[in-house]
Length: 262
Image 1 (tube, helix red, strand yellow):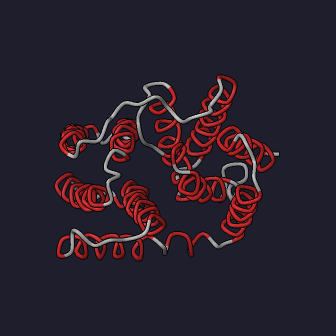
Image 2 (cartoon, rainbow, N blue to C red):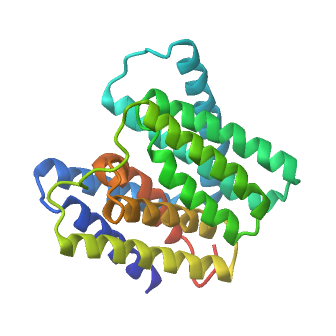
């Protein structure tokens, strides 16, 4: 029953986002559903093992951009870099609670990852993604009791906002084109319903398979709220492929849990 509920909510989220369907969009959704099922069937250890490759690849992109900041890449590569940078941060964040490192090591690790991911997004012109991500991160740190780290992340978010302004990018806009009021309500309702479901699961048992979707849907809900409510000029709702790619692992991993067990 839980798996059906998660699947329905995820489909509602996707439906309200895509709105009008073409053959290409249908193929993208079918591919996304197949990927979500693949993640659902994938052993949890395999998912956890992706942490280090994602972090290493994100650092490699940072080094590449440091030496070649004017490197011209296609839009598909930029989307992949955004996905890689966000997930490198997310994978470390999920494992942080289990390791229980001391305060100094946690701040150093999160600072390095924040600036690495932020630098990647800055070069690709998508640094504004870090604002809603940082807000979700602050809420997550508050929930798990890492209160002393919050001022550092807040300062980094302010720096990111200033850099977005220096880039000349408009932080506020008119919202995604063609998004009706009913679609807005479905987007917000489905995202917060998935967040509430993931929160209930993580309260039963804190593990990789519950913490990943909890933070993930916290970020998705925050991003949708910022774009729909605050009228942010950029976010997941402006990037169909990235939006689908980001939520697939969260939904697929959350369906792996049953009754609080992973």
